[in-house]
Amino acid sequence: MAATRSGGDATMPQPAQGHSLPDFGRHLKPEPCTLVIFGGSGDLAHRKLVPALYNLLLDGVLPPNYAVLGIGRKPLSDLDFRASSRDGVVKYSRQELAESKWGDFERRLFYLSGAIDDSTSYGKIRARLEKIEADLKLPGHRIFYLAIPSTSFATACEGLQRAGLTHPPDDTAPCSRVIVEKPIGHDLASARQINATIGSVFDESQIFRIDHYLGKETVQNLLVLRFANSIFEPIWNHKYIDHVQITVSEAEGVGTRATYYEGSGALRDMMQNHILQLLCLVAMEPPYSLDPDVVRNARIDVLRGLRPIAGKDVEHFTVRAQYSRGKVHGIEIPGYRREAGIHPDSTTETYAALKLFVENWRWAGVPFYLRTGKAMPKRASEIAVQFKDIPQILFNTNPAAPLAPNVLTLRIQPEEGLSLRIISKVPGSKARTNPVEMDFKYGDVFAAPSPEAYERLLLDVMAGDASLFMRRDAVEASWAWITDILEGWAQQSLRSLPEYQAGTWGPVEADRLIQNDGRTWRTL
Ligand code: BG6
View (cartoon, protein in one colour):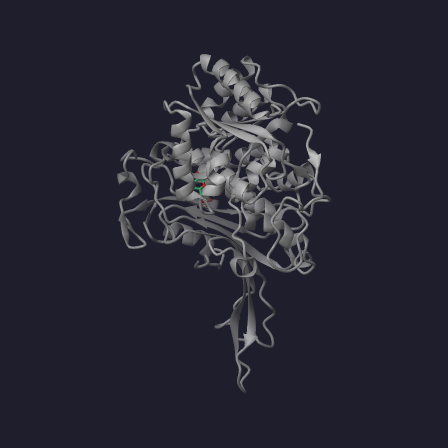
């Protein structure tokens, strides 16, 4: 696809007030194309992908001409697919369905029923695509979204190739791109194998590996916060920072995803991808430009600088646990091993906490504490950067009551924003101090609600901008680091895991992990 250069911020909604942001990272304009969704009748398409496209339409940023072809096992007609898409938009869209816009959107939605492992499906896909593109006068740019388990990626890619639906990148010909969802494999070896198969069909520049956290508005804001403000960078290092905590807590239990989750667990499901990516953005060096590969190189350097956690260290630097019966938001949920579809002896972790170090000059000796879990008291994701204590003179002389440290908290969800805890004088004649929060909420300052991660990411694929996607080497670097921990856990051969009651903040073992260093987890 010969993408066209746009003037930087032409395609983005502007903030309601204040200085308009340069549209960092987006230099290319989305082109008319056909999006082919494998797993078209599945949950992701229904809840996220179709609503995301619809919101892009409402925001006026979709290319003027486009089509969507859903592929799935379910025997649906175009009309059925349109009806179910409408239902998905009504239930899950960020913006309400507008009848005036729905008609044109709907007539661009098509469905073809076919199985991925049926080799005859691909010829039918090709014929259907050619017909749709001829009818709508589309130029033939195609994006294949593999919203299917990674065990089927190879079959789908090879089927597409055999049917002549893929071709090498060529600026003068219509493009073919592929989007793959996480998880890519379940350890380093399987990730390498999957990457190799996709790579034998598509060039790396045509592969878009999604980590939807990178599409979240507040996650993108991390780069702006760090590198568009002069006050943070000078203190963003081991001289001033005591430690960093990254928390991604979820209130929901395993829900309806038992089969997937049993084979995955919190480390693979959240740490290997989303949380390590947050870490990369917090810890990376300033990239010298916003070119996708320059930014991605800076991110991967963090992964490469991680001190390995292997062998005996696994016991000292990691904690895993499962939720037991309890209440979240007043609703009783069973213990993990009593959930439908979960093995009663399961040792899959629903909670993981890690203490890690990034071994470079900037971060020497600064611990990063990461934790994530299901069935915790609430849904909340944040990064908290805690600064070092001030000297024990002037206002900090009483060792029994030390001053609270400065903490910069970046809230990713919900209530996106940031706050800075500072010490202030309590009004009155005495020199009494109190910590106060300087708080900024996105919602209060920018009138428009933030786009969903999938909106930004789909638009970027249409534009061929890979900045917010995972490159092969990054996926493999994070698997390499995580696989050491998985192997350490396998060697422990535990019959059962530590537990935390559903609706609490995790097991006592995790409290000890941080308390042994004289620190505590933050209360969110
Ligand atoms: C997914 C995980 O990648 O991210 C889920 O597979 C998890 O288990 C989800 O619930 C969390 O995403 P978000 O955007 O709701 O924080």
